[in-house]
Length: 340
Image (cartoon, rainbow, N blue to C red; front, side, top):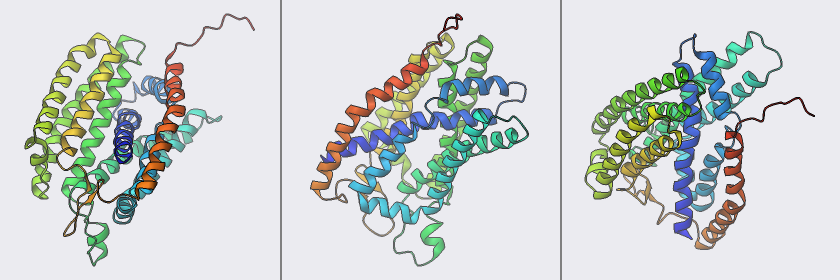
């Protein structure tokens, strides 16, 4: 069952980035939208994320539960040494969800709407920023259980050029994801072209920040180039991600929304595969001690068996209803013909 649990862990992280990341990206897009167009943009993103924005956090909860139950050493190490960025990320999730609900469903329209909007867009930016910082800190080799100072144990682990660069790169990817997804939600050519332009801008930003990530990795002695280019799987993933990006820009202006969404999701999957495959199954890279591995630092096999069966059985019951939730809110509303 170890393999099953690891697959569920990897998929939950991937799906949280693809779906939850796109939700964060919707707020990032609003942040970079002019006052003239912001009303139309909000209308489109409400339709896109309104029904399912909270359901996307299910993937994060699954990943946390898997680490807590199946890999307690990894869970405790991350929750101790990265507790500051984890707390900021969780506060961002709470603030964003609260602001979204009050802005959209508040019965009174007053000056507080401006406050809700600012909280929504800034928390949409801060949350993926720290999500990327946490991911980078996990594999940066900066976590030091033998640190004797507060700074060495809890600050240097994540506040470094590589982690911050990955955080900014994650923000750009979330904006790119959301823009591509929202192209298919636009109900007129003007809005559709606006989201295509935003997708192009975030694509350029992601490319430039990706270069910054590689530079920061060299500065912080993180072997990112080796992970990506010294392994056949990594090189193949880079080629596949590049090819899917080229094809995406061919189909995106033609309003083939499901093909475009599939291509951008595939591209993000290849990016994650390229940076994670070479050091797998090591999950947390450490300073001066053995790395924490999914293959070695796991709970007893009896616990993994119970966890694996719970995940399999739970997915049988939950996933069909989740897919139906997505499907039902993609359907066009039934026109009101005046008949009760």
